[in-house]
Image 1 (tube, rainbow, N blue to C red):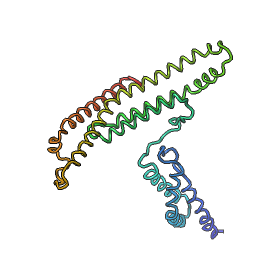
Image 2 (cartoon, rainbow, N blue to C red):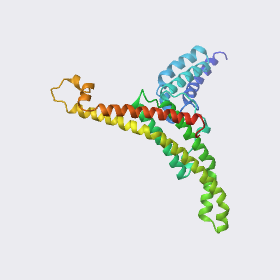
Image 3 (cartoon, rainbow, N blue to C red):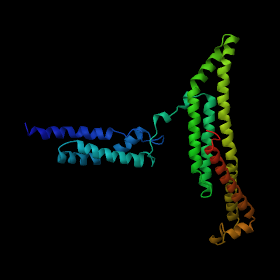
Image 4 (spheres, rainbow, N blue to C red):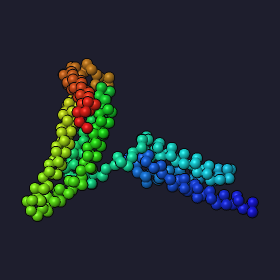
Length: 276
């Protein structure tokens, strides 16, 4: 019976290898890499690792060691490529389906999302003077907090909308008033958050426009150079001054400084509990 044991081990090896590649690390991805994409990425390496793992299975006499080693490689590949460098764990309690919310709530969340996009753009254009990272993190948390409140009141909103649309008598409508008032107050609080974010964004948008104006004026000045002008003149500070661009540059610097101040005020308001 002893000679039969290696045969059994060899027959178990493919199953262990397949199980290793079928596994996708749970909870390690974010929205940018789905489980299917990550599994496909890992599967691309199947052939090479399978041959190597079969050799290990024969050497160790078991599939346990190859399974563990292969899982380590699969996990490393998943984190390095499948998540594009993102290694944080996103819990299930941090996921909210916008389809479960009403149109008013979805519009509010879209406002916050657009605000984040505008701040990210400012960070790219105005760096290093303008640091977008802290505000982006704060806006992300504000969006989550708002979405969580909306999720909690979604059943109440649906109930009020349904009863209001199908109320048989004025008595039913009157009974709905307290709940409707509570929903209206919650929506006003969300609107106040959006208003604060919009006020913060005004100087940021001004700085972005000034930066674009500066870039476009520089391109226009470069385009006005004679065809035989030395390449070293393009974008030269002296040329900018001679072309009357100094005022545009100074305005850009001033508005960028205001955007930086707005960053500090907004973050200070968040830390002091200005809004959640």
